[in-house]
Image (cartoon, rainbow, N blue to C red; front, side, top):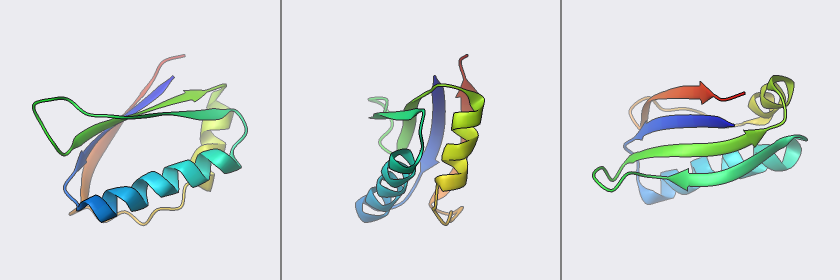
Length: 84
């Protein structure tokens, strides 16, 4: 299991672009499943993305397939948690 916690300050359109980039990368990657984007009730623009990865090699391949140009004003920071 891989969790990516994000601080996102963009528009709904920009969020859709990020979601599409994630889904496209998952489709190209064997061994990684996208489980969804979740958010806490108290904060609108902070999200956690959940993935199921068969191995760290599969996750590395996902990252290589992930095509998204990051704007740090929109996606300020993130942290990744690995549960193996």
